Image 1 (cartoon, rainbow, N blue to C red):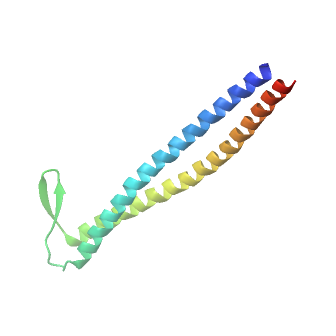
Image 2 (image 1 turned 135 degrees about the vertical axis):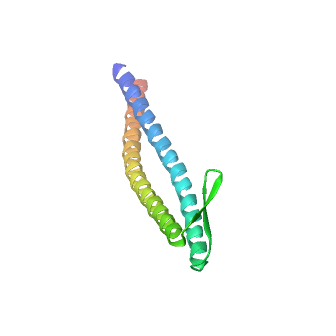
Image 3 (image 1 turned 30 degrees about the vertical axis):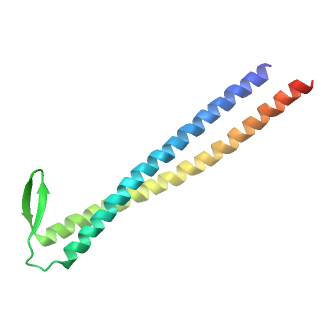
Length: 127
């Protein structure tokens, strides 16, 4: 009977760990979604800046004020943002791969613990 209680406790702990990992995956997905949208917006801005000629006026919104900005500077700023966002997305994908591997291992352990509990319960019933 004590063995079954111990197996139940172990199964609950493993299931809680698995739920935490699944929440981490969901959070990662939300952050990646946000960065993907920002990346698309910045790539669109870069395409629009590429269409402008050298003499075009470019303005940057700083708080409630539009400030005139050099086209080359605006282009460089957008490229830096794209590089930063791309690096963040890469880091998030790397983290996602790590968490997915960890989730798979926890899932296997949880399944094994469930099978052991099931086998012990069956053995107690048939005894």
